[in-house]
Amino acid sequence: MNGTGQIWTLISTFGLMSLFAVGGANSAIPEMHRVAVDINHWMTDRQFADVFAISQLSPGPNVLIVTLIGYSVAGISGAMAATLAMCGPTAILAWYVSRLLARSTTSRWPAIIQAALVPLSIGLMGASALVLARTSDVSWTATMITIVAAVLATATRLSPLWMMVAGGLLGFAGVI
Amino acid sequence: MPPDSSPAFGPPDPSAPGRAIQPTLLELFLAFAGMSLGGFGGVLGWARRSIVDQHRWMTAEEFNETFALCHILPGPNIVNLSFVFGSRFGGIAGGVAAFAGLIGPPMVIATILAGLYTRYGDIDALRRALAGVACAAVGLLIAVVLRMMMPLIRKRDAMGMLILVAVFVTIGIFKLPLQAVLLVGIPLSLVMSYFVRMRGQT
Image (cartoon, rainbow over all chains, first blue to last red; front, side, top):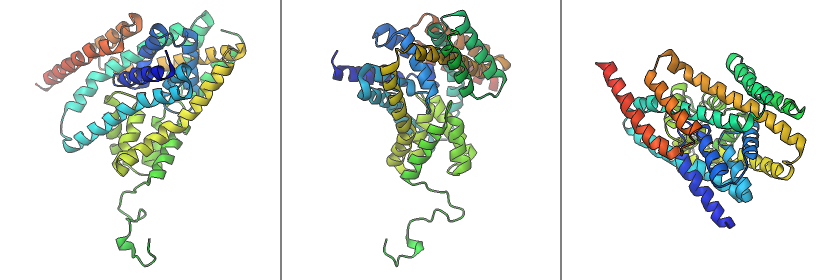
C-alpha cells in the first residue's frame, strides 16, 4: 500500500472508530488492537503493548495511543492524521449536540442515555484491560506486577506515575 | 484603539465585577495546553481545577453538566469538552483554540517519543522497561474498571451488570468488531434502561 493510501486508511479507520468509542479512548483499545494487529498487521502484539505503555507515560489525554499507532504506520503525517481523525468528528458532534440541548434542557433523555451507556463503557474498558493483559502479562511475574498495581491503585491514593516507574524499573532489572 | 475612546464603548472590561470572565483565544489555547501537559494520568481533574477554581470561567455545576454531556457522547471525553467549552466563549475559533491547545502539544511529544521508539525500540533494556510499564499500566486500567463497577454492584443493578458482562465477553474474549457489538448493544441497553426507569416511576 502506498503512503497516501495508508493515510486514508488511518483516517477512515479512526474516524469511524471514534464514533463508537463509548466512554472514551480506552474503550476502543480492543478495536484498535483488532485493527492494528489482527487485521492490518501494522504492528506486533509486543509493539502494541509498548505503544500502550508509551501513551500512558506521556502527558496528555489517553487518546494519544492513536498518535503512536498512526506514527508506526505512516510517520509524522500518519500520527497527525490518526489523531485528528480520532478527535475531530466527535468534538464537532459534541459541539452540535450541546447547541441542540441548550434550547431544551428539561428533557430526561440525557439521564436515560447515560444510564444505558455506563455499563457498556465499563464492559468495553474491562475488555481493554483483558486484551492488554494478554499482550503484556507474558509471565508469572508480569502478572504479579499487574495485580499489585491494580490493588495499590484501588486501595491507596498513590500516584499512578510511581507505579508505572516501579513497573519500568522491575522490567529493566529483568524481573519479567 | 483610538486613545480617546471611553471605556464604556470599548470591549467589555474583563475585570469588571459581576461579569463572567471572557478568555481570549490565546488564553484558551494556553489554559488547555497547560492542563493537558500537567494532566498526567487523566486530564479531567486538572481541567476542573483550571476552568473552575483557577480561571473561574465556569461554575462547578456548569462544568459537571458540560462534562456529563461530553461523557455520554462517543470519543475522547476531554477532547470533546475542550471544543464545546472553547466554542461557548469564542465560537468555532474558540473551540479550535481550546482543541488545539489540548491536543497539539501532547501530540508533538507523543510523536517525538514514537520516533525514538522506532529508532531505539529494539534495545533490549528499553524493551524490558516498557514491558514493565505496560504491566503496571494494565493494573491501573483494571483499577479504574473496578472503581467504575462499584456503583452498579452497590445498586444491585442486575441489568447493567448483564450488559457489562455481555460487552466484555463479545469484545474481550470473542473479539467481535466494536461497531457490530454496539449497534446491537446500544439500542438494547437504551430500551432496557428506559423501561427500568418507567417502572421505577409507577
